[in-house]
Image (tube, rainbow, N blue to C red; front, side, top):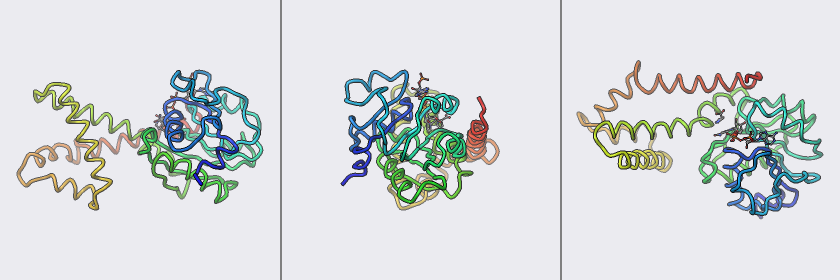
Length: 271
Ligand SMILES: NC(=O)C1=CN([C@@H]2O[C@H](COP(=O)(O)OP(=O)(O)OC[C@H]3O[C@@H](n4cnc5c(N)ncnc54)[C@H](OP(=O)(O)O)[C@@H]3O)[C@@H](O)[C@H]2O)C=CC1
Ligand SMILES: O=C(O)[C@@H]1CCC=N1
């Protein structure tokens, strides 16, 4: 028994195979999704997906288990317009902003699950938050959860109103962390290190600290204190980074707030 048994029997349709759709597809194929059971709809399908046995831009199966929508929110209306009605299919959207209500208008009566994943899904290290509509049964939610659990961890939300903040935190978050790596590498260069060495030190520091944050029993605050010798180098660095006015906390608060706000705008049809 695998989480893909029903999906492999009935089919999965992925609409939009770009950065996020592609990341999930990579993870699903690695964990048991059969290429022949997978229909990918994307007008500009990347070369990497050809020759793998996927059904590329092929007619939709009669009654797929799941329809995954992974196009940009701004393209969603066009993409939905191209889909015919589906009989008994779970609709899963990963689009930022786009509300469950807007999908209910497109798929009346259908079970709909809104998910916010992130791109580490490509290596099975994602985190996804999900919430379903009234028509989504416990079995539908379990199906969506098992699909996303195949590419990382899954949390369920209490309310759709949490989804924009989730998007601003963990959906967009990998980009913040990649930028942290870039910024640390640049800072090392400024202190005289060669670029390649600085990048390697920054990349492994973030990766190692992230892994430790998951595997250690202690909270991140304790792990931070473990690095910080009284009167030492870390304390000097953190005095800058943790400054309540000019440090990371207010900057991160503004960053997540801006992303959350943008999610809300997209939900209202913002271009
Ligand atoms: N990237 C991320 O980290 C995350 C993205 N998301 C969400 O995932 C969704 C996709 O984002 P992302 O992968 O970054 O975007 P991309 O632009 O990389 O991927 C979207 C893909 O959909 C294709 N497409 C456009 N119109 C249609 C259509 N009518 N039918 C089928 N495919 C179509 C695009 O083709 P073309 O390029 O030709 O337009 C593109 O290949 C968004 O809604 C986003 O909010 C959610 C979490 C994280
Ligand atoms: O930037 C975006 O809008 C999407 C949603 C979360 C991550 N990428």
